[in-house]
Length: 209
Picture 1: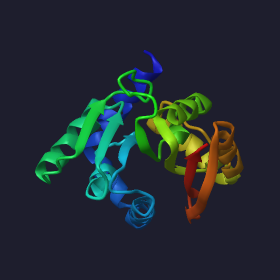
Picture 2: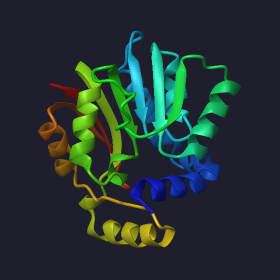
Picture 3: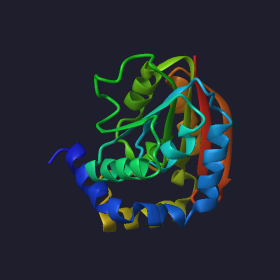
């Protein structure tokens, strides 16, 4: 079974209780949405990469032109579409696909969001290159990522927990390493903030150079 199929099956199973798990960290998620909204404009076309059940996409839809949400999990996309229809949000399009889908055209997005995802992808430099490629000149990459490499004990605990629940892939970033991957990928870091010490949850805004 390839990595994509493993990831799809894993997140399909998580989709039934994904929103419930997200609500456990509501305060941090509210901060992420507030800070993201402050960086976006009404004319923006935004890609939500790893959109899950569409929570972030729905939250920002009212202040931008259009949102495209993508996720590897068909069940997550199904849930996202259901929530969008229920709330009658008209400017979001969800699709089950990856960031490397050729239907996503170069320099077609003003902003790309990636919340709680970068530590789950295997080839981060390749992903950063693709994100840069999809952004318009001066476009923003807005991310929130747990940098679990900052704490040895936390790294051990999360590693054991990840094996127990069979997470397909897990990366233990240190914040300087993550920022370095962004700058090496032709981005300029314009904002960095640790939103929560437990889990070292870092919010980063990077601008395409």
